[in-house]
Length: 353
Ligand code: AHG
Ligand code: MN
Ligand code: MN
Image (tube, rainbow, N blue to C red):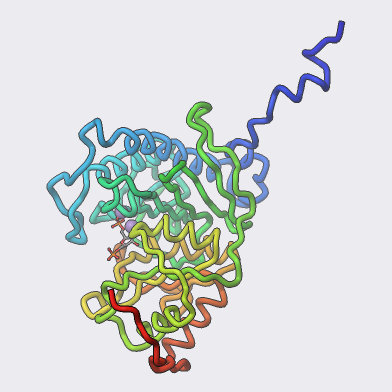
């Protein structure tokens, strides 16, 4: 009789589960030149908190976690219950993991000292991005950025550790809580994505080596603010209309970003009359996404400067943001520098409705 436990034949009934993120990280230790497993541990801590937040989101409708908590964050924005829950989960995971000496969070006014003064890393985090979409069951996310501290290990972390340019990031990523939960990160050696397998409790490599198409036909901008854009941005929007590009705007940066990276596209949150610096925060929204998009082969700018080259002045500093497929962002630059004259409305007969 054939021995199926050792036979090649038996393998067809035992599909591979794929590559779990932990194994993937371990096998790529060479990507972490300064670390002896600490950065790997930190990524695992973020993944762990992401799993717990996935659960909270999945049950939010039946566990009383929808809606506002009744307070505002440092930026005067109303906090959702899940904003606060996710903030606690991530800070707790990073504190207990002991690799991180300080955290900058959208939900916390000041630099958070984790009391791990021996930790070598600093994390900037948007614990829950797109929180206006929580109550309507639309994709939301977490965005993170990791730096090595500047001050000596063993001392109290300071603002100097937090206010580093995006070029200093050692890793960045996002977790998208969508139709599935996806963790995407880069350490500067390309971009990889992992889908959460709920049954196994593991993130499994599903999107190896993500690259963004050089060109695309999707533009993401909140056109409701069009009257408050400057002429250059309005020019570009007219260009998109003329090209019959598809407008897609979810209102969760993570979801808009992820779609554009996979399909090709451009995301713009420009300066507006009300918000001359745009809305998105440099440290935990613009910088991590800029690092990822560049690693995927795209471009990120504030319209004047490469996002990663901006020297931050404050923990919650905002920057205008344009990022995406190279050709689209270059076209946007042409438009905002007035090198593009939109065609005048051609004579079109519209059907009344
Ligand atoms: P957050 O929920 O972390 O405050 O971020 C919301 C951000 C971002 O996800 C999204 O792209 C943008 O706000 C949408 O803003 P508008 O509603 O002004 O378009
Ligand atoms: Mn956000
Ligand atoms: Mn947020």
